[in-house]
Length: 139
Image 1 (cartoon, rainbow, N blue to C red):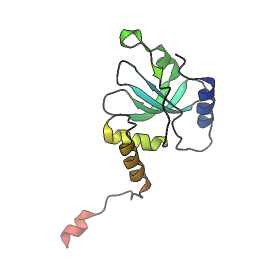
Image 2: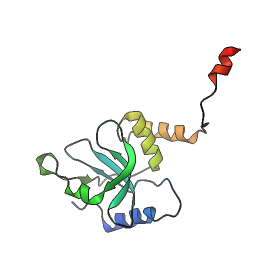
Image 3: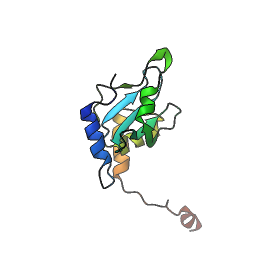
Image 4: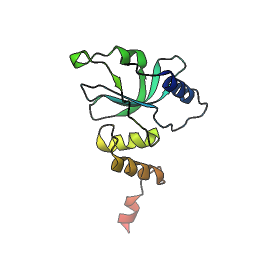
């Protein structure tokens, strides 16, 4: 299977070439058909190999980071199957929402309820420091 079509490559490269940091919507989803590994990818560097996105190797700690396209293409899992592209994946939220939902779930999820929860949590303003509860208990 071709992991990245010319159209997807162009979108990933455009996101990677953006001069400002942006919270892109994932362009594609890759997965291991015989295991838990999943990647939601938003960008491709000009080197044509370094992808960026949400990476979940199935250990319960999905993280934002980079992955090599060449390495993904070389993976042969159980039964000799390689990494595949989810042909039906339609991103509905920016990457930060998927990352927040994955933090809740412990894995990349497309569960609508968790994604909406994550979107709501990210839309609320947060203070940088927790409230000073010591001051309240002295009164």
